[in-house]
Length: 495
Image 1 (cartoon, rainbow, N blue to C red):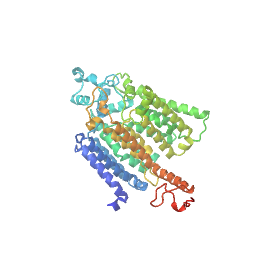
Image 2: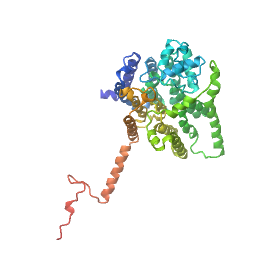
Image 3: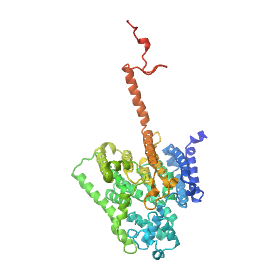
Image 4: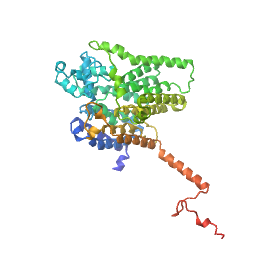
């Protein structure tokens, strides 16, 4: 058995078998939320452990078998698309708001609860009413920006309130992302991304739309690599429009030009021109996309910004910042990130000298943002995958595990059965503080392993001990105590 694991296919097949079993169990209803959230933990361990073996397979294997592995990834996506979401209900709002936009109704003006009355409910059939009943926080209007709402609307027009169609549509973005990763990095990075278990679960089982802003992000980086600089910044603006935190990847565009470039007048003119294209990318969907929709779509983005201002979930360092700065905690986070950005800029010659370093350090910056952010959903970490694949070193990287650990955030008090959800607040999402401490501890362990910090500490200790020996300080010898003097060297008592 262990000899088989030494071959490339021997290390690949266990994961392919386990992830296929997981997809089949979800799509055929063998595994459901009724089994309890704790049943997911051993599944996560098995998938993570077997996926690690994939990271040990050499690049040459992925180049040779690239089409086969991508085809297998497509089959998995189709299977997961027919599964029911597990411990997630965001999909209901996606489908509902897509239906509203398709009927010329602004989801920014009418919250789901405004359709609970019998008069308005008659506008929709049983399917719409069932989806309406599953929406969490029905008192909130839309919390997503227009470009995402248009995708929901297009899916609704193609297939009426179809969750399967919503998921299948993501495959187009996913294939483009694979191409960008393949072009920017290599075949191994692309395949590891495409087969990543958390990606399959969060996007194709739970229907999260994060692939759309990730597509625009990588598309902009690819365009910038191909010297389509202005277009790259415009597309990057579209990514920010879809998900505001995409802005934290901007160092890759700003500093990738040339870290040695002097800060002269032409540099700042170029930066201002690119910033204009970025702003155009952000605001264009607000101006032109409503024209494509039926009816007069008015705007009220109060809920979009209120969500980020009031909600807090799975925050790691933010509770400490809140204790220190109280009501100004979010402002403090912004200032910390601005100072970090200034540091990256000052250290650009060292941190962004090569493309590999630029990708990796941009990923660290975004991870730092996630550590500080008040809202840290598990699927946000999927944005790190294209930036944290280290496929050229002799030893496999552990950085991809940062996208696995946040799955512990599903162990909310309600899912664990510790207490019932509170309807009048965010009580459903309460996460035990001990679990967040566990998450952060696991993150630290990953970085210790990744950067061989344990080895460095032992090396430093060894140097210190050797220095002590040279200074003639006493050490333990044989069974003698550490501080026991060597009696053989004592002088006899002169008295």
